[in-house]
Length: 428
Length: 130
Image (tube, rainbow over the protein chains, first blue to last red):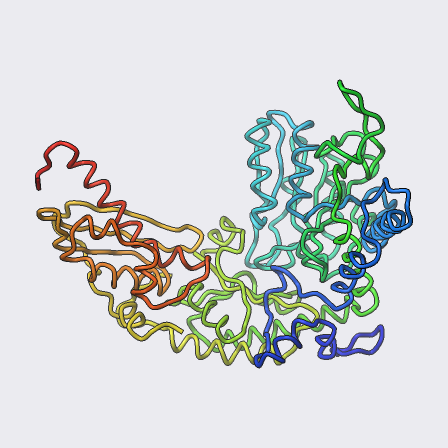
């Protein structure tokens, strides 16, 4: 089961490609990394791509008339093509490099929504959004007079509750996550595509936040037919500081530049300027060149080593093993729908009655086990699920059953150490 | 992970009580952690005579409140206002990263804010304890 089909490498062997694990092993304690939803670890080839660029072809792009400047430009544009192929964009000019998913969403807020939304318009979100796909829209609503409407999350199914029912002619923008960073997958197979089609029929534009799903499932923007889509490089084995905003070509003219400056003009005078064609129009200033090249390297690594079907099976097995461990503790409550996570999950979020999430996460951290704890940048959603804070275990391709076993041992010890029954001084 | 004394204060908090006629009180919370603290106290001749706290949260926030209230009864307002982050870290014997520093400092912040408001109310004119 847990074998890559592409070159027969097992998930266990995959860990060798990520030097951080060997580093910690050499220093005497294994790193049990269970926080890939926050950021993934980086394979050697990505680290080398960064070093390689700065060592051999570092130059600014789109301007120098010397060898390395032209090589840098070529590598940067090749990276754009690699990303375009990875998400099946129709044209590489639809790929805009940003510093991450958050910047991509703020980009659309400033450069499209601010220009097109009016009082009476509705921005449709879900209750399960990350702050990155909530706060920009609160601000846009305040500035444009549009209102926010939310599709509820249904914990009895693990999916969003009847999303299509919230589509009305007043909805001008849908900004929606493909997966939640708290409970994972939010849409049934094919449901998001159908929903987007219906939104288009009613005249709405759609932005998909694919930050969580991009490293777990294949992404096809033409099949989705979304207008905008964002993700971050660092959650998909790439470096920090690089992300992608997909803008469908037919929207390039009605989307303003997000920033104005170098590299993005057709011509400029003291009084005004006209814009270059996309993608230059949308990439003012020197972009994260090395980051884009290293992101392409991450995508090549995924293409070569990761079969998404196999990965799904692997992650589901890890979730099932983890849930079995958690269910041994009566005081643990798992967020979301357990059966859904067992079938589709790559993360499990939970709370332990009587133990503050930060205490347990700090204890696990001391044992070399990295998990996330808190409101997970989704404070309203975590609160709506009935929690003050959660501990989240999230998996990547490099995780193994041994990681779950190490977590299980430390969890047991942590609960024993931190449990307070006498005075109940924690009400969590 | 935590010193036994800290865990003891967490399991058996001292001064976890409300006072009948407090001279000052202050509520503080950290929504990102879910820590909340209310501190109240009585004052006589610029000296803190009793302290009580209530709240919920992590070991560090709750145990620090217990230790701090214990340490501060009998101290003057000026002595308490002079306490710093380093005094708290020395008291709980922990080196904390930026994420959890707030948990350790929430009770000192609440206590000092409460005392500051008390002083503002009773100063600069001759206060009842002058």
